[in-house]
Image (cartoon, rainbow, N blue to C red; front, top):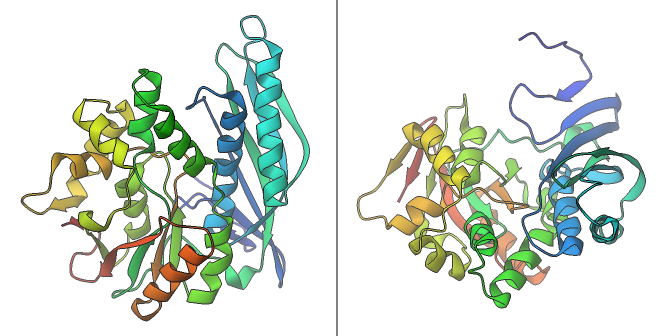
Length: 316
């Protein structure tokens, strides 16, 4: 497929970037993205908040500032009460207000299944764009949110999740990646992406695609929802997890003795997951400490970048 080239296009779709970036002038570029999905929690208001946080995350992952948004809504007019849509939109609007984003419009279509998300426009300085590539050997990998939302969402749909499990995973998915994004320039982040449907391994694979580097991921350091351990053992495994494993397993080397739980969690499709960032080794500990102090309590160093296994991910 041939894509039109433009000298002002800083980031397009060629490298699986999180958002598109187009330079308007030497000190200003436009950031654009769109995302929407079906409900993953039962409460309409919370679904709205999560969908907005997820949509904004692509802008945050590249170091941008989201400014405006348009609602993208699919709604079954004949089978669902309009009050549900009102709650979804109210949750979304509250999340936008928390992010300092202005809703400027949107579009709704009649559809058999409820879906919601945003088309987002933001800004960034052209020289401050953080791509999903560019990690350097020796960098440490930092993840800012717990893994396991896919497994727990599956348990929620099966009626197996306790209220405390639902509260914890909802709070994480609805949390904005804004704080981590705003701190990235202070710690010289070399590359970043957000962890969503392709899971930790899938999005890490995008970061090393075509590069001379590989990643080492230490399972013992991964931040996870404790409830996901129990649900995974009970077979609450989303279909997307299997698809991710089938697609990416050929670039993954797993050390002997890694438990089945970690062999699942690294492929678990996330909804509104955290940022995965490659940070200079001498700044990693200070960055994690700053994240903790700034309200990102689950941030952790989970591995490092290496030149020894280019294009591959070592799971130890």
